[in-house]
Amino acid sequence: MRDVLFLPLADGVELAVAADGSAAVGDKPGDVVSAPTDVVAYFAARVALLELLSVGAEARAVVLQNFIADDRWEALCRGVERAGRELALSLPITGSTESNFPTVQSALGVTALGTVASQRKRIGMTPETARFAVIGRPLVGAAVLAQPEWVLPLSLFAELLVSPYVYELVPIGSKGVFYEWTGLLAANRLRFRSCSCPLSLFSSGGPATAVLISYDPAGEPKLKQQAGRLFFPLFAER
Image (cartoon, rainbow, N blue to C red; front, side, top):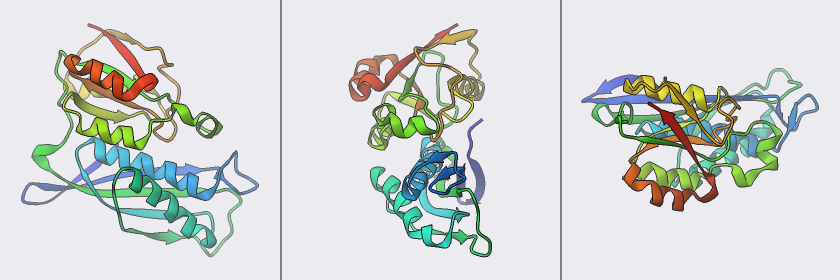
């Protein structure tokens, strides 16, 4: 199941809504993982935006729910703007801040809003002949900041998004590669018995540090060239 809500608008166009939340990551004493506020917002925004773009939607705006502090608003916006910039997007930002009561841990919600033509949704497009791969390494928590070289660059995601060889893209979430792979198979009514991958199939992907793709085998050399060492094949047993 894709983590995007679709609502009909008019003339075959739908509103697409994707969201992500972050808690206990930031610069407060009670936070479990220490990170600058703008970095927290950047990674939360990338999850929501990647979910939105991967289903074929065009991003239109971002909504922030700031439970950190009033004086963090500008830093949060900078993080969102950075994610947008790396995806060649310039998006309006609105939202709300909890300014009545102080919090002991950082918490943030990011919602990305977009539109998509009903006939252009990028869902259920993977044929039986497709191959699969994970681009990037699933990371979570402090590992995200400690191993930036394994995090999928948003510029590479943008390239994959327009590649003629890629059928579908699915950001890896907290349930890991196997969960996203089985969801992709179900959406396409494909049946495989098992799979293997050089990566752990069950490690959390945290803030979408990796993405699962289904692709045309003819494009494998090009995709490997684009992704370099971030390309991890997922072998499916039929």
